[in-house]
Length: 61
Image 1 (cartoon, rainbow, N blue to C red):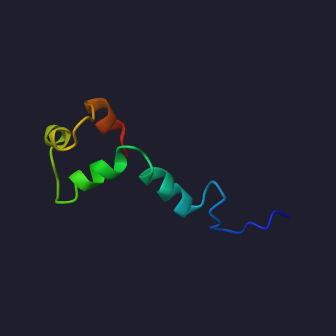
Image 2 (image 1 turned 90 degrees about the vertical axis):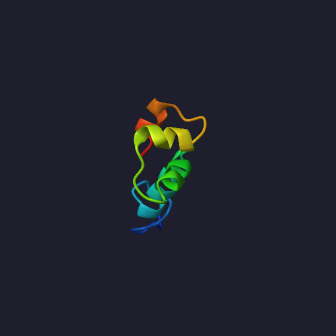
């Protein structure tokens, strides 16, 4: 018996663990901040976030 129950952070499908993995991505926090004041066009967001490529911006969840 492992002792892990539903919602345990050690389980791969734990919602809290999945949220941390998503936010821990290098660009996710910067993109969220760039979008925090409302909708922004793709090109404008690239200007707001220095150093991000168009490809990375498109791939960032």
